[in-house]
Amino acid sequence: MFYKVLSKLLDYPDEALMAAIPELRVEIKRGFEAAEWLVLDRFLNHLESLDLTELQGAYVQTFDLTPEHALNLTHHLFGDDKNRGPALIDLSVFYKEYGMEMVTKDAPANDDAANEGASNEIPDYLPLMLEFSEMLSEEEARIFMSQWAKILNQLASNLEEVQSPYAPLIRLVEQRSLLVKAAA
Image (cartoon, one colour):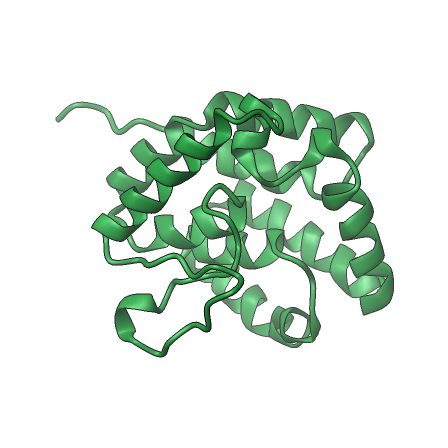
């Protein structure tokens, strides 16, 4: 549930998100640690304090118009370099191995259960990565996300510099990716 909730909150805000806030409040009270719950509750309060148009404008300004804040994680490694392509292909193949098909923007999504998590986003889009992580066991999800920990740290730092309300959410993802279960 952790990854599913964070995926929703880090995706482009829409009417469905705003309508889901009461349900999200219930989910976070049940399934999150106290420190995580406080961060998420504060963010939900932020969402409720603005109208949808303001939220969408702030989201676009934050993530789409500021490259240092991009939610496409390979962008932080490669920028627009041609070497980014193979990393995106590797991610798509990895998703496919777990039954999550990527849908290109040109192709219509079909309704197969195997494509339940399919998206029109490129594979390194953080909300999509979190959605994928929800399909994994907790340990697998942490291992998958741990390879992105340095980028998540830098992204959170960049967002903190501009006092973005999204920074604490990125920190939550980063912290979860760093947690390693103690050997039994």
